[in-house]
Image 1 (tube, rainbow, N blue to C red):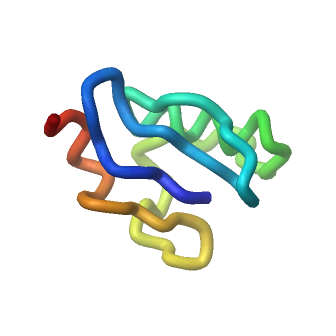
Image 2: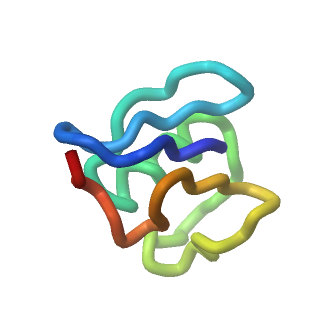
Length: 69
């Protein structure tokens, strides 16, 4: 999952080249994962390993950065 550079309106999120939408916070990224079929029952966004490079590629800032332009 690629979380693209932050800008006004959040960060674009893609999975295998498919645009999943814009995330405005980590919970949105978690929702995109669930909708894409990842098994995450009962996990809150705060329990994800956001630095897992096998799942996430954060471009121009990590999960704490949501708006810069």
